[in-house]
Length: 153
View 1 (cartoon, rainbow, N blue to C red):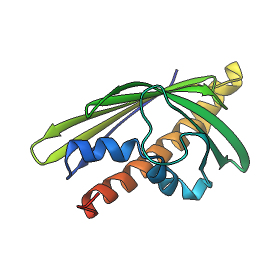
View 2 (view 1 turned 180 degrees about the vertical axis):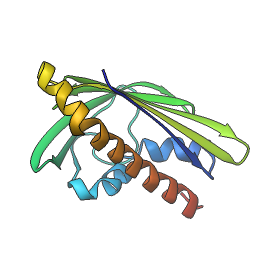
View 3 (view 1 turned 45 degrees about the vertical axis):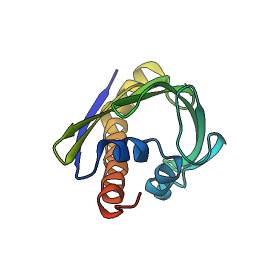
């Protein structure tokens, strides 16, 4: 099962970073290049414990749907979402936040299992893990920029 671990340092309060990470609207903004839209469940605002969102996006030229549920939410320290249905066999994305002076350290741990057995493992090795890492890094850059440049949010 591949795991992607990222650390993003953000010059903003922990609560602001936590809420921006749960923002459906910011997620859609950060994924405009994949045409990602929330189409069911929570489709705007902040998602919370037990709630689901269904995303529709274009990856590798194919329109895909994925539904995830927030399975853990401890404001402002950690929240976790897990795939309910979608293109992966499974995934779990843990978002952890630590306050360090005026800075928030946002840690992502994204564990996933590709479908299709050996072919899925080959796809992970050849391109999928790198693709997922780039998506998460891009999303985190947009979150960081938003948190640091908009003091009123």
